[in-house]
Length: 195
Image 1 (cartoon, rainbow, N blue to C red):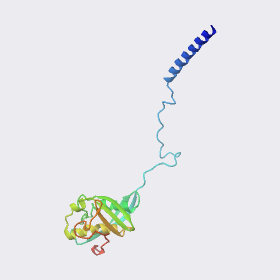
Image 2 (image 1 turned 135 degrees about the horizontal axis):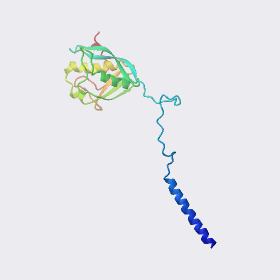
Image 3 (image 1 turned 45 degrees about the horizontal axis):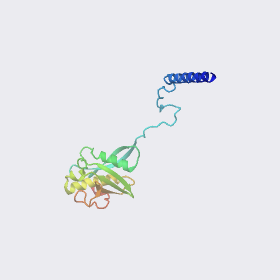
Image 4 (image 1 turned 180 degrees about the vertical axis):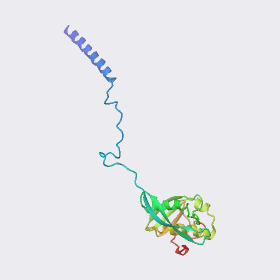
């Protein structure tokens, strides 16, 4: 008789626990349903190390643009905005500036030319240019001289660039535009600079 009462009590207790446990599962637990905290405020004095975008720097450079009659290269001062003053980034900025010649001067790059990559090692800036550089060039021998030396004379104004090597889609060409030797890095030609 005691065993039967004990069993009945255990069953009743188990049912009680199950019922109470199931009801507890559906309860509104406010610690689990609170919305996530907002991200820390960058101006919050309690957050001393806010993540901010890198500030833009400006670098002043001298660039050379061909005259409209191809008699020489005119120096022009430009300001390039960069995130860091690494020469590779400055060169990329200079290539964008080549598309905006000053009044009376000519954009040196053939249409749709893209700078695919630039590396500097031991004073040599290696430019990897798109096929458009060669395919869209229309200038003859004098035009070729203006295009190549506009680039070379401009880039060699940078402190760590002494010469420029030209690649076309990753390949070194003996004469990238058909005439002048580009099988080795090209140095500046100051005789073309207008005084």
